[in-house]
Image 1 (tube, rainbow, N blue to C red):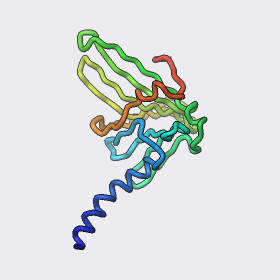
Image 2: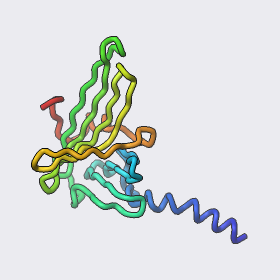
Image 3: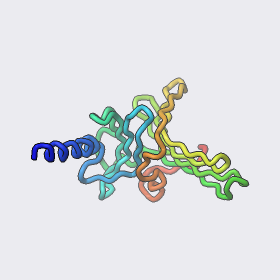
Length: 162
């Protein structure tokens, strides 16, 4: 009998650690695990009251942006995308980016596909005030959702390459 309880509770531990990245009133827009075992999660309130970025270890959220969960949060993110069809012969690609700035650091979430080499990538590029970039590589097979779901939301839109 005790073994059954231990097994049951061991199944709940991952659920509790993931729960801090998704509150009951929220749904995931885009999320993935990084190669270093961290979690990136972009969530929104189910009634579109706010959007929030969360990043950290499986045990705790290390960064949330913005700090307050209000309707104004949507204006603090900028979405851009580019799609070119035609497959390998036309160098087809699908690029999606979401950016925000916190404490003079620019964060750019990305999800890309290029047909030429059939490569997929995801991650976060962090740029400091001097232009130095740090790449946080995501594990593509762990992606949940799509940045592209921001297309018809209140997030600011920017032409690709601006």
